[in-house]
Image (cartoon, rainbow, N blue to C red; front, top):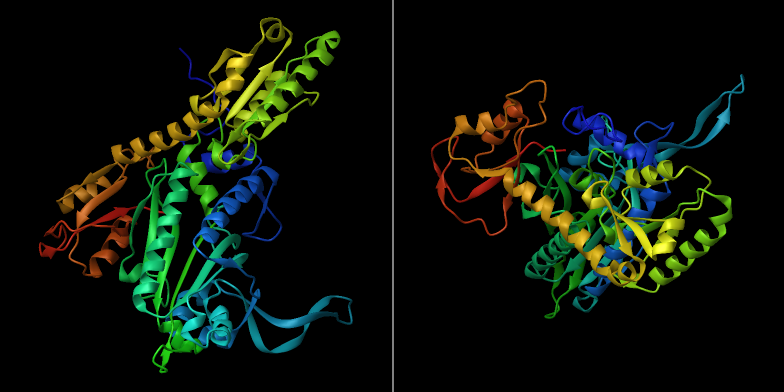
Length: 504
């Protein structure tokens, strides 16, 4: 029996990184541009981002946050104020030094009008938002101040990969000020729970919640919380972070307020964010060797109706039936809104159209032809089941479409969770740990590893050893971890297990 043909080549097993690039291309999500490291997000990819953005925006507003917008450019002196922060981002900054272009004697445009102070294209906005918060916060009555912005940022990536690491990307960044440390810590934890809820219930992507180690913290933070997801190559993806900044940025930016007792106090701040990296995580969590698979809740279109019109004399009747079916489906409510349905009546061969939609990962394909009309049936494909299709009675399908979409959403989550559980293990021996992260088959180096739960005595030198020896990092100290044990590296007491993995 010959090897089955797939729409994507190479397959995940043959070359996972190249498979990922080919899925992005085949799904028409995004492509590279003449500016190195920058991507254009195409309509299908941007539609996914819009659904991510809109759902999260509701969650933020339900918890009292309001949207604002802050400048793209940050004076260099602002970053200089917080030493740890500037050290953490210095090598990633794009810097504007001139205000205009002028033609030289040969007509070649040259930078001119040197700025008195260079401007940084925002890599993140803590410093400039802190400057403005210092104006807005005067009294305890002004607190808590809960602000979010949807924006783009620039970090000069040396090894870009579409959605996962690009020089420019889209994101949201929340910034808040509180009157007490306890309130700020509660905010940090609350926003992480929102990210975890969204990842699992919208992207169908299981995540671990936990705290970063000291060396992995956000520059300038007192603590960083994160959600970590396992991709199909068993690597970890940091999918969102929430930072308790303490009073570090308040000291640097002068965020002060008059307390209840009339004394001047420094504010306690937080910041938190997710980005278009979530789309990369979604791709690598669910997609298969035939292309993208999109969870219904974030799919730009839930279902596409494909008219099958082999004969011109039946074309009008089939198209009319398809449009009527679309109207019926749009009357149904799924995930708080009308079901999103397209009728693809392009003049293309049926098989070509069908495979285009398979590769785009649409949850449901619905084929309708003359024979289906005779039987009052439709031919339905569920993307989570590969390329299987079945005939259903028209009325039955209309009645069940909401439950079918719910089943798809749940099946994707359950499948991803089972995969993570199958590839997560507790390890109590250093030799076993090194073997776990060492490819036994060099021709397929991606097919190994996963999440290792090990005891660690919190000595940072072992983190460096892991990175140098195995390219493995401590992804997080899991939420609620309290099982004491013996460190696999030193043999000393360990307060709890941590999660180790290779990562993006």
